[in-house]
Length: 168
Image (cartoon, rainbow, N blue to C red; front, top):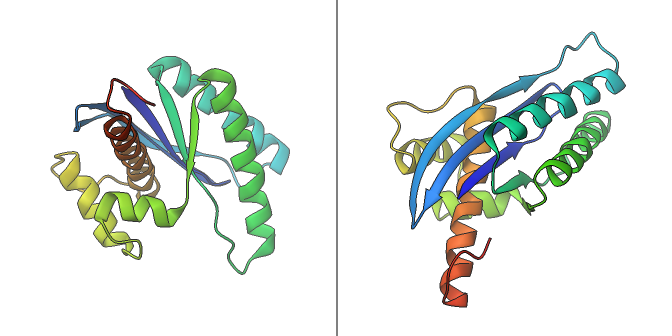
């Protein structure tokens, strides 16, 4: 199964694509989509949609997993990121058809076994689980790979509970 993980943002969107078969995970691709701060929000959202569409069409994931947002103190930033996330959700469902969402707590719990893990712990586990030589950079890409790993774990658990074949 090919899984696209997304760490949403307005300035930077992390994406991570993994292959996952029978509990073995491999990196297919990862990186970031960046939007120019000098552009209007509408243009930045259009750029995100266009870039994500290209990634999905090129890599043809079986499913997409995206991290849910948590509210921080900056309401203006939260709204812009929420708008970007909405565009990413729309593009993912339109281009792939299979979409799952996970809270940051679920991602941390799934990847590290501890829901309050810090960023360095998460990054080290992503490196170990994917058998990489170094922690993926930038951080947004490593976070997106963690979301993809979370989805792979979720699917594997669902398959075990169902007792048969591919669940996700």
